[in-house]
Amino acid sequence: MKAFRLDELEGERLANDGAYLQFLRERNMSVGLYALDAGQMDPQTPHAQDEVYVVMSGRASITVGEETTQVGRGSVVYVPAGETHRFHHVSEPLRVLVVFSPPES
Image 1 (cartoon, one colour):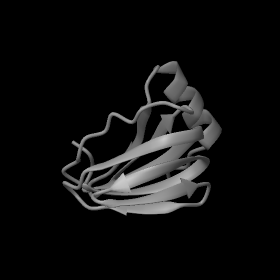
Image 2 (cartoon, helix red, strand yellow):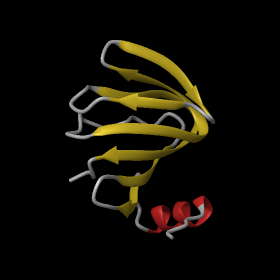
Image 3 (cartoon, one colour):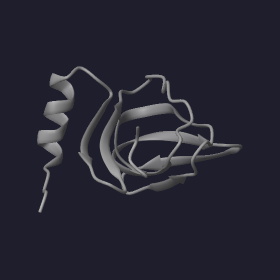
Image 4 (cartoon, one colour):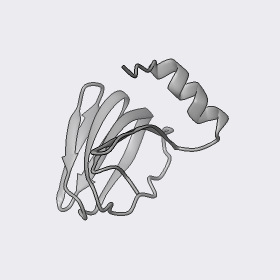
């Protein structure tokens, strides 16, 4: 079994001074923690993998393709591989679990 604590992952992400921390990588998936502070721009470009975002805390908008929605704690968003997507209007510090399948390269 592999088990993780979000507070420990957040500490590791901060120690590595990055917005993204991949903490699990298996044959068919990878999982990471993504963080954006209030007002911060999201520099993402489309990925070659399908993604699922699970918002753990914070508030923002996300645009996937031509669709935009508001997200907050408990929101789950699916992004197909190759689709343009970006968080924006981050009004509260955003912490998101990101699941890639297959694993992010």
